[in-house]
Length: 379
Image 1 (cartoon, rainbow, N blue to C red):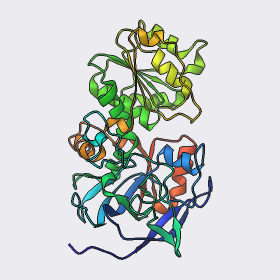
Image 2: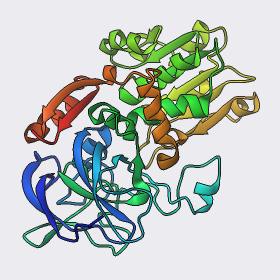
Image 3: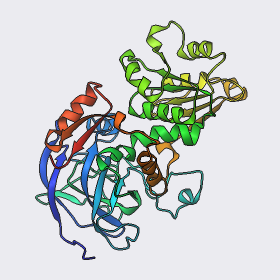
């Protein structure tokens, strides 16, 4: 098929500086280079990570930048050496990749690709350390290798999952980050046995996806832990059976949960990134067999402290990244779970806005209003 080797003009929402509203600009998107693909993004959604880096909290600020990493689109053109996808394929771009050749990709236990694992500081492509975005010749930085707040974007082929073309991209786009992260943390890492008790710390989109995983696994009790009691009603739709607000108790939440469950839960999944919640999530699991899984990303100075006896008493502490899913190998099968009605995505999607109103999506998230906001690129 004839490849487009020309730059492609398109609209993008550019973050010119920290915390300032994104500006819709016409950007020039260079053709894909070796092992790269250029995508036409049809739908994208806003994840808390986008907001975190837009606010420039706790990491190296890099502006001007095109944010966005949760999306669905179609391959527009491919660069040299690309054989896995071709123009017209429906794909999900992913912030972490799978080169299929490194020691991690060849391991059945890891999804932390040496070449393509997430790098939040990199604002350029790996191939030549240059940006594919420019405005009047001035480069605009990439974000986590995806930059989906753009009509066209260029991504390494290892960060692109080819999916069923019949899957609605306005729904399955949420699988390219948060929902898969929470779901996989439960199903792939915590692995709750049928009939078990599970605690989920943090009832945002990732936490509710973790709860959904526990529901799918057949947990008998799912205890939601959150500082916002308003989240409990919505959480019931995702299988949460009980709710604990740590602010409403005068003892540590791990003690509250231990009392509720005759010594502790069988599994816990921590989705907030707050160090106190991480420690509580570990200490609330039952001795002898309890497993706690950390999903949330802490601040860079956070230190995890617990008495070693908690480990010696046969509790297990695990961490996970993107739910232990390998993006190219595993995402297509999660899409099929949705297509087969084993997984419901509609309940995660609470808002939709046209691309021209992308800043509304930021407003919703900053107010804690809803879960996922879909951004239609044609609007």
